[in-house]
Length: 258
Image: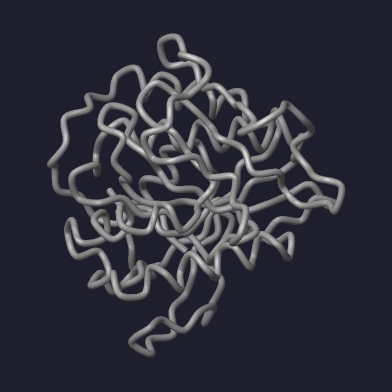
């Protein structure tokens, strides 16, 4: 199950605060309880310029690290696992374009628009893919989770489920948001079903919303979770994570997408 939901993130390319892929984490999470930890000293979730502060989000199965060029080779391996760039309903970069993908993500963070993560498999320390908080609008207390993709070996495992739980927990419980959105290609039925399983509500279809790399003008389906709905969504995700087995290698289609 792949997720692709959006555009690139950002942090300063010279100082991404992204620890090495195999860096130890300071806390050992108990059971399926996600932990939010700052990469250095503890501080507010938003910096003095109003940008999302880069944080490491740690769970039992996955660690979300602020995306930086130190993740380049691992991310290339992840996208080669299943040749993800060939999926017509997604926007996964070709391995040759991963460097530019990271550059764009870092620039978007500097502009206060996004915060991209490398999705790291806690069991192996390998980069499984990427995801991000994007379309950030803190004054109106909303953002989008998107541009998510996972290599084939991590599809249909606990990695994606826990990553979504970590990001939603950060959005609602650390940032105090009112709303989190998800967008996916109308053609991507697997993605729509996966987003609905998060507890998200389908709100409508944005017609002629995006031009894909092959020139196709796609319709996008808009979903959201609100702060009022978050406790039930969190319960559902926590239960799904507890039931999820983690062996790698199962095939899956695009799971959540922009």
